Every structure is written in C-alpha cells, then in structure tokens.
Image 1 (cartoon, rainbow, N blue to C red):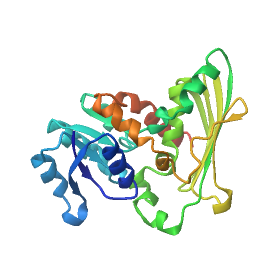
Image 2 (cartoon, one colour; image 1 turned 120 degrees about the horizontal axis):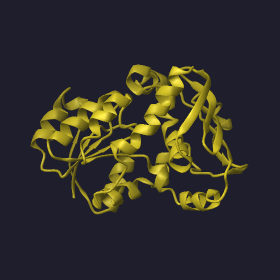
Image 3 (cartoon, one colour; image 1 turned 60 degrees about the vertical axis):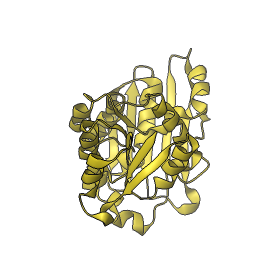
Image 4 (cartoon, one colour; image 1 turned 135 degrees about the vertical axis):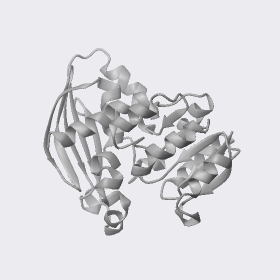
Length: 262
C-alpha cells in the first residue's frame, strides 16, 4: 500500500514507523513549508492509495473530505474533527478512518472480561501532564485550532469510556479552561469522575484510568504515541477496517456537551 502524508509535526515518526512495520511505502510528504495549499495539489496528483492527515485539528475536516472525494483511503489523527456537524458530513464516506489507538491496547480485552458480569462501575479518569510554554504558543494552545484541552488530551479517554461502557446519560462539568477540565459523567451502569490537565508539575504527571479501584496503565511514557499502537491502526487499515466517522462521533459529541455544560 502506498501512502502520502500531510503534516510533519510531533506525531509523524510514529506513523512512519507503523507504515514501515506493515510494509507500506511512503511516496509523498508535504506541509505548509511547501506552500499553503500544496496538500491539495498532492491529493489531486498522488499515486498513493492512502492519504494520512497529521495536521492541526481545525484542518482535518476539509482535508478528509477532499481526499475522500478523490477516491483515496483516508487515515486522520485524532480528533477526526472538532465539530460534530463536520463528522456527520464525513460519515457518508466509507473510506475515512481515524486514529483512536487505545481501543487496540492489549489491556482492552482484559478489561472487557473483567467488567462483563458487573452491573455498576466506578470509574476515575485523571490525565494530568506537564506541557511547556512552546505547547501553549503552538496551535495546540489555540482553542479555535485545537478544540481545547479536552480534544487534545482527553479524547482518547472519553472515547474509551464510551467504547467500554456505553453512552453518557448525564454530565456535570465542574470546570473547564484552556489548561484543565474536571467533571462527572454518568451512564446506565457507571459513574465517572474525570480530570484532564496540561498544567501538572513535571514530576507529578499521571495517566490514571481506574475501574472499580483498579488502575489500568495504558502508557509508561509521557505520550500515548510511544506505545507502538499505531501499528495496529495500520494493520486494520490494510484490511479496510478501522474507526469510522460514525464511531468517532460519540466522543466528539460528548466533548461538545462537556463544554456546553460548563
């Protein structure tokens, strides 16, 4: 399978490694340094089978739509879009997939087995990390571009919550700003206390996902990208499988609800 990549930021080495792992071939890599709209020319002319989108979050929708219309398989980093109305438009395409790699973590099957016969679950999500000044001056620190901390940092965990336990029936956002959010999410058989923050001290960083008192550690690193889970994403892609816009919609709608209730 041949790949073209749009975007050369922090995450691109993980994708290059995963593409090499599955035996893929990268034939184009572009970013804004080549010209503001060079990606459109590349999508139009590339011989690649798949367009990989690794750009700031606010660009995802247009790029996904353009590449899908060109008949390419599309793989877009999370979040697929930062507005649910855009994801609903992307849902009509069968060739778009997004990256929510925690669903493919080896712990997930163990968790499913553990919770299968239990009726009520107490969940704690606490993703509190340190981010430097450069982070806040980049597009990630601009809410209009990134969607804010709940999209940048929280979307993996909110998606996993819904994937494992089902829809949120009630929510209460206690606080949310450009660095930190806290609140409570209730579902049919669970209650979840959550905290997402980029304002933690460097030596106090933590990624907690507790279910009934047991913590499931999805990463020993500062960032989830280092766990090689992207390999699973590309293996699924080669089988024409993956997380569709319809599947990605629920967590994006949840983040919107969390913001609206603040």
